[in-house]
Each structure stands twice: as C-alpha cells, then as structure tokens.
Length: 111
Image (cartoon, rainbow, N blue to C red; front, side, top):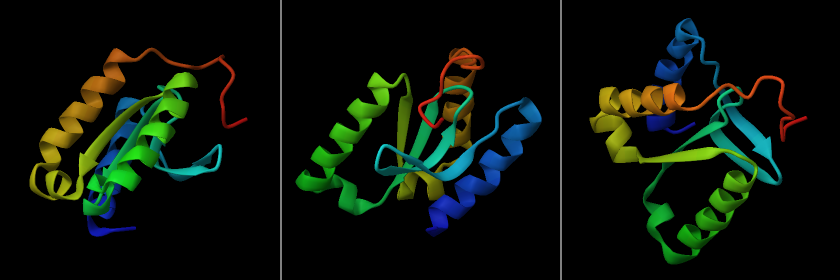
C-alpha cells in the first residue's frame, strides 16, 4: 500500500466501532478495490497522479460505471487530499456511509 492508503486504512479500521467494516484490496469483476464497505456498498479509492492521465481516467470511468450498475457508490480521493485533509476525507466517508442503507440480506456481487 502507498503511504496515503496506509494512513486512510488506519482510520477506516476505526470506523468498525461505528458499525462500518471495510475491507482492503478486495477483488471485484477483474478489478481490485482499494477499500470497500460491502454492507453499505461504498467503495473508497485513493488515486495517485496517474489517475489524471486520459487513458487511466477512461479506465476508472468504465470501472466506476460497472460498480454503479452493481449498486455501489464510489468515492475517489487524491493522494494529496488524503495526506493533507485526512479528517475531512474521513468525515466525507462517514457522511456517505450514513446516507446509504444497509445491504444486508441483499445478494452481494462478491458472493
């Protein structure tokens, strides 16, 4: 994991106390998701500078569309934002989690 991913992962693990469990590097239809809360169908991606390159941005768009079709919301944060505004990033993630209903009892794309 990159330094921003390590920092974010340390904070995401603490959200378990609020009832939100994240998994890291979870496979999904040929992709690897940085972090995913399966219960709330929320994916969190940490993007380096290469994600701004046209080919990578197009690839990310295709991937995000596949996740959206499966019912997932994707949040993307730059490495710089994670390193410089970690509290704000966590607040945004928690807000998104609270807005999404539990997927318990629904079929999971990971099954």
